[in-house]
Figure 1: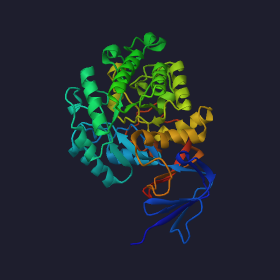
Figure 2: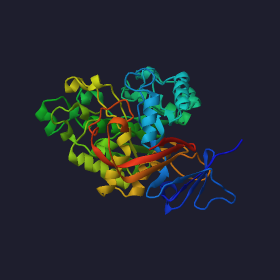
Figure 3: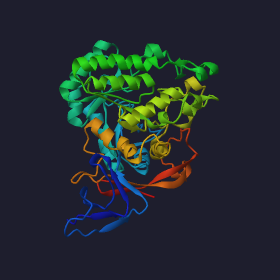
Figure 4: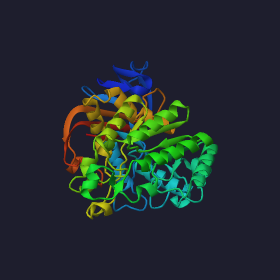
Length: 427
């Protein structure tokens, strides 16, 4: 059987994992990268991709993207959202366990992977449920979930009944060699709040969600992580103090990591002025000081990954009174341009921004992804950092248009995405 050979020429290749930033070629044979730089002797390409004026980098790895299938296909499907992922340069994405058939059995893991494989637009990594049914009481069959292909477990937005359950879950996960993904939230302190406990939320008279609801949960989990030796990843942090706590824990040798959602690096509590439900997110947009601390934590490497925290919704989900609307932003397709804005604003250089989308998240989850190393899967993203586009209409592939950025003009767009050497998006 003939193996298709591809060469990507003329682009600026940035591969943070291998410390590469140069004008070189990338050679692919079948589903693997076989050379970066000079082509192997005898290599003749079946297809040449001209990347002149573009960036060539590893496909992005997204640590948190909800696909809504199975169970909420009226919001989105694996087909629609992995197509959006491919258009965003995302080749690997992690799906939280709170699908409407909770990911707490190997059968659901296999269902997700089979459906994603049949669509063939992106690699989907299911995160298994920490507790059965996400009810926070009984531990899930973690070893069975690992055998089915889960690399991590978590309880998504659902609370664990008490700290004893959490401790036992961390111990079990550590014994299974699984990462525990924690969305830190003390529900009693949150008290059904929906906006940051600050001047804007108070003025609007909306239920307040203090940052202490996050930081108290972080503190409790850190203590148990240290005691159990579990590998813990904190997802979608929002507060200055939480970033400082992660930095302190890592200095003490506790094996923890953390990410931030891309929109938290741009918007603040003022986004909800006018009761704009498109800015209703969990955790809420916080103060300018919090946003700047998240940016600083990203620059210093305390936060080693940026995720989309993609949550597509049907239109009705955002049409009620603000507290009754469903939180979340459809954010896959703005992941790259918002990351490039951080580069323009001097928060990160381009290589560091790409690292937070590739090497960083792959390392957190222990995935063989996020690099252009010879021998790995040919997951490649090409983008034009100067290409202007408007995030709407035919240029928006997600079924969810629930984004405060929808309709805005951006600079920076993915022109081509390869998954295992196959073109899954071409502008």
